[in-house]
Length: 252
Image 1 (spheres, rainbow, N blue to C red):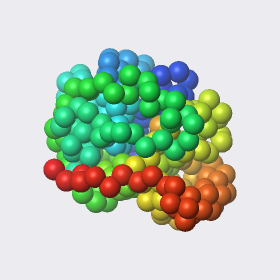
Image 2 (image 1 turned 30 degrees about the vertical axis):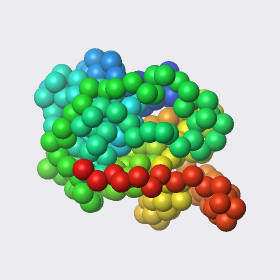
Image 3 (image 1 turned 45 degrees about the vertical axis):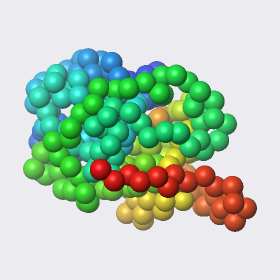
Image 4 (image 1 turned 90 degrees about the horizontal axis):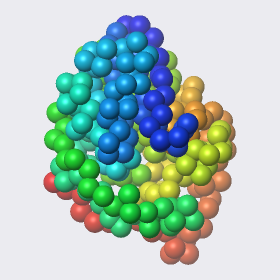
């Protein structure tokens, strides 16, 4: 199996919202951006010399509008099946994110008032329902889907055999990618401590780099240092009873 190459596909700004093209024996797309982004992603894939109809799989990291918003459109454009975790099947099927959003800080509180976060995306029915760790060799890349719950119940990441972690919103760059290389929370988490536990689990696998949904790639050592500080902060908030966690039923 050839080495898997990870190529960012900017959906908004230079790094504000990213999808990814993974190149191996066959190409795979990770995430599908906001509604109306399918054609843009399709064109960028072609600009990298890849025939979009060769795409073997579209992996959606979680059920937020900026990650699955154009999945149905991209499925039609490429013909590729879509993979998503069963715990986020509700948002995928309805096209609506579970609300209210739970902000992680001032940026999230500001963004929660943005009407574009509350629109309905085109619903989709994933062709590949992820329930656990899933090898992607049958789709032509040396990589595995790894469940990383916390940001949402059904959040997943993709870990290549070479150690690149395509991490969705497991972690982000500060201010939606405006401060490159500086680890931070994305604007929202359903369960911050569960997300941090997933992040620690992925860091224990010693990835070489973390490719995130918002911002440029992050170095693992910087993420480890940030995660240690974040654990202390969240523990204090939990002890004070000030840590918001989504507890609604996510069953389908």
